Amino acid sequence: MNVVVTPAMLGQVVISGILSGALYAMVALGLALIFGVMRIINVAHGPLLMLGAYATYFLSTALGINPYLTVPVSMAMLFVVGVLLERTLVFRVVDAPELSSLLLTFGVSIALVNLAQLLFTSDLRSVEYLTGAWVVGPFALSKSRVVAFVFAGALTGLAFLFLGRTKLGKAIRATSQSREVAMVCGIDVQRIHLVTFGLAAALAAAGGALIAVIVAIQPEMGQIWTFKSFLVIVLGGAGNYPGALLGGILLGLIEQVASLFLTTQLSEVVAYVLLVAILLVRPTGLLGGRQT
Amino acid sequence: MSQRVALAAPVAVALALAAYPVVASGYEVRATLQIFMWIVLAGSWNLISGLTGYVSFGHVAFFGAGAYAGAILISKAGWPWLAAALVGGGAAVLLALVIGYPCLRLKGPYFAIAMLGLNEVLRALVSYFEGLTGGGNGLSLPTLDATVPIYYVMGLTAVAVTVLTYLIITSRFGLRLMTIREDEVAAEAMGIDTARHKLYAFLLSAAGPGIAGALTARDQGYIEPISVFPLATTITMIVMVLFGGKGTVWGPVLGAVVLFVAQEVVWARYPYVHPLLFGALIVAVVLLMPRGVLGILQVRYRLPRTI
Image (tube, rainbow over all chains, first blue to last red; front, side, top):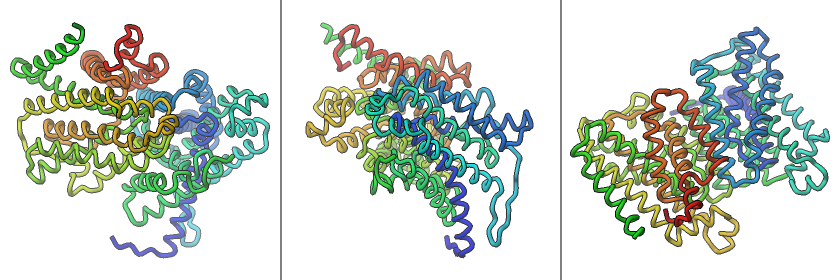
């Protein structure tokens, strides 16, 4: 396969990569938060994103609300779902061996996907809004992707402001650094876990709401997001929140550059080879270990 | 006395099953063949996840890899199916080496998530190398009615996996694996080369699914990506092991038999509710009876750990 890469193509690829990378970063930040604070990898993260996409679909088609206005509603709904999940199931396995939390969230993820299949059927659904692209010079910018980028950037910024400036956010970071010390300082760790899980589900829901306008919605759309979000935090370094931003943008760029040379069919293979290679060469991630 | 029973009962069951195809109908032989397959799959998953505590969310990948390796050898190179099945097992072990070496050196969930993605990757690769695999159109094998011989080979594989589990659990190697499961840092401090032990367990756990995949491909005569890489298969083997009792010899066998029969008799009538139930069952077992049925019996009746 001989592909001549022109500078314009490369520019286009870089732009597309950054646009989708911001979404990856936002969704992965949720997974990274849960992992940092509770030491759990939430396998159900992607299915929560799927629920967020369905929330936007039904709000915008049944009630006729502008899909972008449904983003906060969808986030709020999934925040509640996240809190309920934590309070009923996940809190029971926080200190259990890894096997328990992985299997539990795996079971939840299967149940959510199949529940969605029962309730919403496997039909592909889509939200028709903002189709087409803006043409700027030699580049074509898909409108829905640009808006998704702006939303993702703003929400991720807000999340970092929350973590950096508010008392609750600082408590979350403190718990993530050391649960025992946080507890000694008077932080209600149970409550922090609850808020973190809700927040992470809300970030996943935002991702789902934004890609509802871009790709087709179906019950199994989520699982690949669990994998990609995990890849993003491996790239950036587990427990390193700014690392998730870098990892997200990098994953977006790598996928887009790879699509220049390979068929899009193989984009998941590229992401996978990347994961294995990173684990082989630099298992602590590009930015190194835990810092918050 | 009880030791004699413990030895005589499995031998009697094995003899009865060996004579079974003579009297049974085609459907009954096929159903029993399926049970053997599930014993192989569940028993193999138990070797890595039950013994070391490293959860494999993509064990069906080895089944699929074995199925494709075997089917390609049979249909394109004209190999006899028995040899192809062994090579299918070998291919799965090779794949396990490539994935296991980088992912098992680390602690934590890296391995679990890497296995979660593996299935999708293999599916994409099968579609990409269309010339060899037939892509989405699938791959047809020359017609051959070999269900009864395959029944015996699959049965032997099931016995082999179960005996292997017994040998491992009663060996020093098995003790080391279980030490890793209970406390990996302590295991390392005791001088166990944890990465290497995990890798060995993982390689052993890939062989059975690879052979079972190739045998199933031969028996069904046609494979396609959806039929040999379903996530549902991984879910089913996990549920079987958790239900029966992870880390035990007979737990996977018990889980495979009970859940397969339940699936055929009851849940087949409600095809959509069934995977939802499996998800709920995983959650319930993890929270309510993490040791599974056999684990509970072991504690209550003080049965030996080698059951």
